[in-house]
Amino acid sequence: MSDLFVEQGKAGQPLTDILIIDCHCHLGPTRRFRIVDSSADSLIRVMDLLGIDIAAPSAIPACTGGVITRGNDLVIDAVQRYGKRIWGYMAVNPQYPKVAARELERCRAAGLRGIKVHNLIGTPYDDGCYELIWEFAEEHNLPVLAHTWGEDLKQIEPHFDRYPNVTWIMAHAGTVKRERYARIGAEYPNVYLQFCFSRCPRGVIEYFVAQGLEDKLLWGTDAPFLCAAAQLGRVLFAQISPEQKAKILGRNARRVLGLDQSPVVESDT
Image (cartoon, helix red, strand yellow):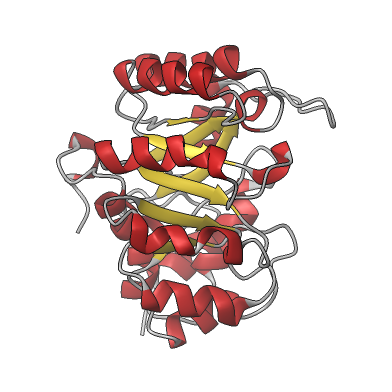
C-alpha cells in the first residue's frame, strides 16, 4: 500500500496536501548557547521548506530566561505579522503573582491563545504559586503546554481533574517512563502527549499508538533547539498507518488548539 508520507519524505519534498501543525517550538535567544537565527522569519522559512502550515511557538527568554515581557513580545509580534501561520503561547514567572497576572491578561488581549510552563525556573508544578496560571487557563479554556521529563508528572497530574477546562499538553512524552505517559494520556480526556525529543528512542510513537492513543498525540519540533526535519521524519517513517500519521501531524492539534475554523486548515482531508 502506498504511503504518501514515506514517499514525500524520501524525496525530500514538503507535504503540501496534508495539514501539519508544530505544537511546540520557540522564538528568541538563549544564554546557554548560540542559536544562529531564532526569529519569526526564520521559523516561517523552515515551515515552508517542510510543509508546516501552522507553528505554535513560545519565547525562550520568557520560558527559561526570566525576560518575560520582551520574550512574550516576540511571540505577539510573530502572531501579528503571520496571523494565519503562527499561533502563540504566553509564559510568565508564577513566583511574581501580581506581575504574572497582569502579563497573562496582556498577552491574551494581544492574541496569544495558550500558556507554556517550564519547571526549569526552579519551582515544581505542585507549588501553590502555579495556581494563578491554572486558574487563568481554566477560566479562559486555554491549553497549557508543560515541559516534563517523567518524574514531574507526579507534580502536575493532580491538577488534571481539578481544572477540567484546561487542555494539558505534556511535552517530551516518552523521554523516560513512557508507561506513565501512556497511562495519563488514556486516563484523562483533557491530557495530550507531545513527544519531541533529541534522542528519538526507537518505537516511542508506535508504542503510544499501540496503547490506543493515536487521537491524543501531538507533533512538535522543539525548534530551534532540535532539528525540525528530524522530528518530522520520526512521524513520516513511523510504522503506523497514513491515517494515524495525519492525525498526529495535524488533525489532533487542529482540535486541541481550536483551529477548526482557521482558513489554513480548510484544505485538509
